[in-house]
Image 1 (cartoon, one colour):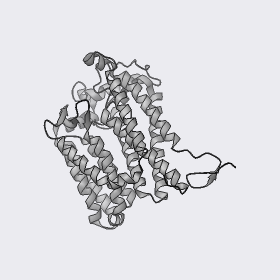
Image 2 (tube, one colour; image 1 turned 30 degrees about the vertical axis):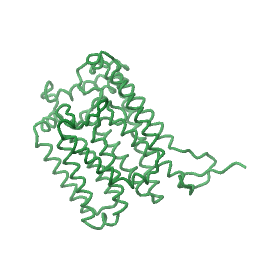
Image 3 (cartoon, helix red, strand yellow; image 1 turned 180 degrees about the horizontal axis):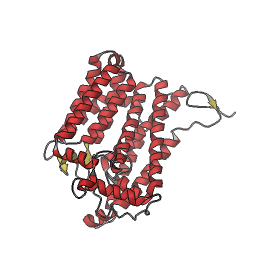
Image 4 (cartoon, helix red, strand yellow; image 1 turned 180 degrees about the vertical axis):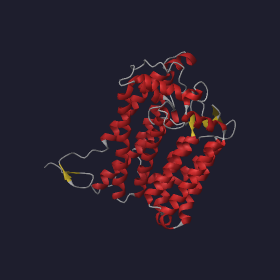
Length: 388
């Protein structure tokens, strides 16, 4: 007798039950492949000049990817309830690391920002870790204190206090981009939890005013804002990076100049393998390549929201909030990075998830997608009434 299978909603179907979301997994793998391809292409000249090896950054990225995939496989075997149980501990460790990174001799400074803790063979960018641990903490808090958050001002203020501490520590590095992403993600989760609209609007106005003040409080941020509004006014100084990025987009046209044929990566465009990798992709693969990457990120966001929705329908609130938080974080960061590259947003130090060069970023992104796959896996088994 052939065993019957069931859909995610518990209805009978003749299609065998998949263990994981195939669309999400396929999108994840495709983005990783494109990322390796573009890191190799965009970094070949800088690797040759500084390390006498055209594949220096590619080899490092492959090592980071190996670690990230091992971590992802481990995460996919761990029940999501464990992250809820230890969310407070993870947050405490992350906050400690955020404080340690500010101490000279422990934190490593690059381009005037102290964001990394050096471990010898590699450096950890703590802001990447805190993005994930804040999602765990807020998701767990919303499960434990859901009624207080929606009905009491004090219940609403408590997570804002933790967010304030995180934001201050990040701004001391300084890392304005990570602060925006984390704050926006937390606000999105509070909105989904059903916080009272007057509290939410009041906090939005307060945060918006604070970000506006921070944006004009230091000369380098003012320079970034003015360069973003009119980069060609000072194209050889404050507007240099953005104008070079726009030139890359212009050269790409419909189908691009060809993989490996970028001119802007030849020391014209700074950070071409990290923050501005998308500009090199636009130059080499053109509008077709841009649209393909946009479609991939759209699929990732759509599947992540679907996973969160199913978990919520099954009353698995921590898993649901975690899925929503991860999806919003990855989608927002990708949108900001691409917007910066295209001259639609002010320049920020944010990588393109799963594509840009960077050890901590790639590893944490792999873990984040693995969490989505794990939650989806639990959704499927829960729909059958089985334990995972």
